[in-house]
Image (cartoon, rainbow, N blue to C red; front, side):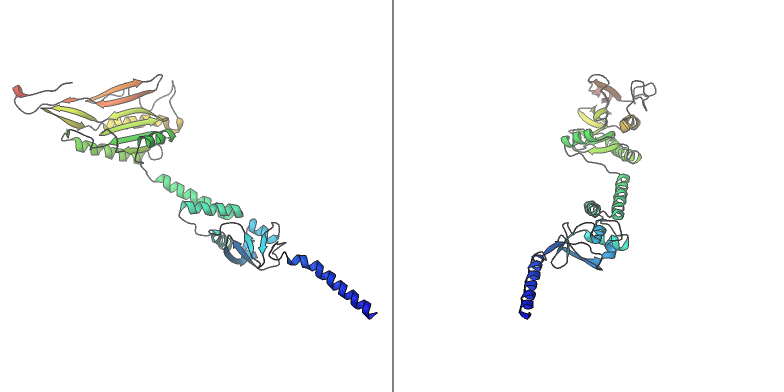
Length: 331
């Protein structure tokens, strides 16, 4: 009887060892049923190791809470680390937000966007809202700052004007593009044009896009665009015919420039005046008149696609010699 009992016990031991053997092959990596029985959790996020508590991960209804509850499967390695296949660069921010309910966010917009992506993946809604609020604040600050783009090429100018939904005012000033000498008041008038440009930028910031062009052919010229095409142009330079020489004169038609700036506002938010609409200012109406020394030209390309071009007329100057010795150059 003892021999039979011994044989039976040996058979039972071998059977139990045979059943237990397959489970030993899965100790390197397996799925966790639940982490509720544990107080601490070891996390391996893309090679970055974090040690925290189940209570911290369960503070918000997120992916991390569901991993702790066992509602979402997670991979655990042989050493007990919960493996998350994500970049661990910003996981510390997510973890600190769960710990404290608030966390400093990076100032760099790209890094802030990366933190937002991680918060959305882990479904931590509090951190998601925190990131969105920070992004909106940065956007408001950028919109309140006056930024003036500088034109670097003709293609860039065309692309910028065509893609912009706002009216565009461009000041082209290139003092060095002159083969004659300037008159005595030209430098002052050129500075006045630049000062007026700065004042208009401050006044209509956010409504009109102002750009500068210092590489063009014109010495001082204003251009006004709406719906991606040129609406008006005010050229402030002219050639002055003096005794035995020519000079370049720069004018400052302040009233006309301001008038055309107001006119371009009808293209704001695609609010273009129709056939029966009212223009803010009719530059050719009875209430508007060209200043002394100014002329207006219109080029038509069909329909109402006309460009108002206002140029300063050529002036005739005399020297201070005797009347019989004066030389006058006319057009």
